[in-house]
Image (cartoon, rainbow, N blue to C red):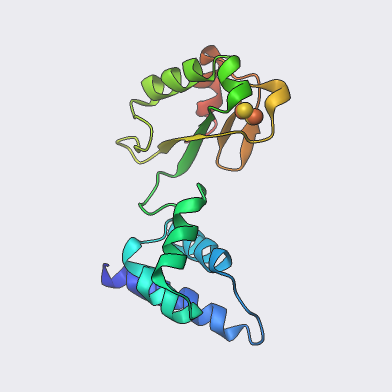
Length: 156
Ligand code: FES
């Protein structure tokens, strides 16, 4: 882990330990690291596990379970195309193909300019107006390939 990244992880741990009397869950801590650094470095797992008094496997398990947590740096924006059942039935796969083509990045990749990371998600509770796309914290429904350029224009 780069020294600067390790330092930022330590800063998060210091802030958490300064909150006297507060017991932090694995997920809480991972979310704090993600918020501070933009991702959770795999190399930080032993240190995080030690600070929580849990096993590295427990930390790794939570980290791999939640799609909002990343183990690599992401782009400035994270674009998630839903491939849940309702979205697939309404051509969510076409939206994903168009998204990848428009951004010139495959699923799991970040655009060369660092603008967007493309991910998939499996139901975001927006089935009634599927297919759905989530960009950062913003949820969009009835997304079509034609709408993508205008939608993405908002995220520079
Ligand atoms: S399946 Fe996509 S929002 Fe539910």
